[in-house]
Image (cartoon, rainbow, N blue to C red; front, side, top):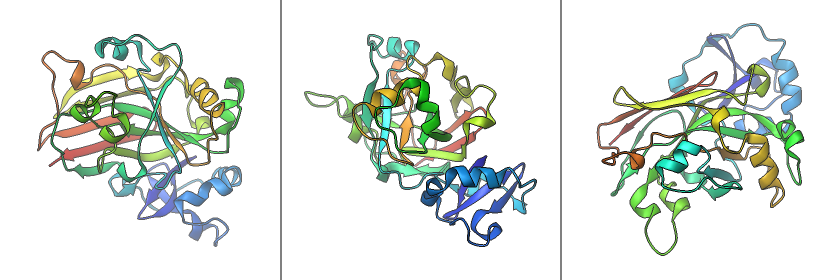
Length: 276
């Protein structure tokens, strides 16, 4: 199943078309994107009966697939080569920080650059489908509703300021968490733990990797988090970025006004950010 948030309404995406979920089910399911987790399994069974979309699907019209998560987590240093370019040791356990919901946007946006040095970080984002507490890695996929694409945009000067890192603030400026264009259920992928992802700046490829290269897989991260706290339906987990970020280059390279950032994730779609 592929779900999009179009103009604040949940749409089922079938091929190149879209179906308004509430209208097509005569109100059986709500149009509110945050409500889909209340009946996700039932919604997925209904979706299998739909063979075509009634209206054209235009990804540029989409908002964030999950517009109001209770929690947004992110994993630092989750690719060996990214740890190396960051001049850090490969972690022996997931390194977790949080992002703020106010930074969340849809897939096609204009981002106002703050002062400092803003960097790109393309990431696979896992969306929690059912509450998870003390979950094992073996059972973790049962708690994942689907996958989407995200950029963990980062202002590096603030991130490195002070006696301790400011990860949460530096990665939560307005527009710093674009996601989308789709939430795609794991059954839509042949191998949901091995997807190609990458991004380019002004047409130049800067990141290109596969999610199978993550140090800690989605199930391992879910198990780790759920043994500390409760994961709620709709929570987002940014799973870490592969190598190729601007901070890791010599000389370092950061985003400027007028730059265009294009990101992609196999089977999910693309993000397009312009910086002003």
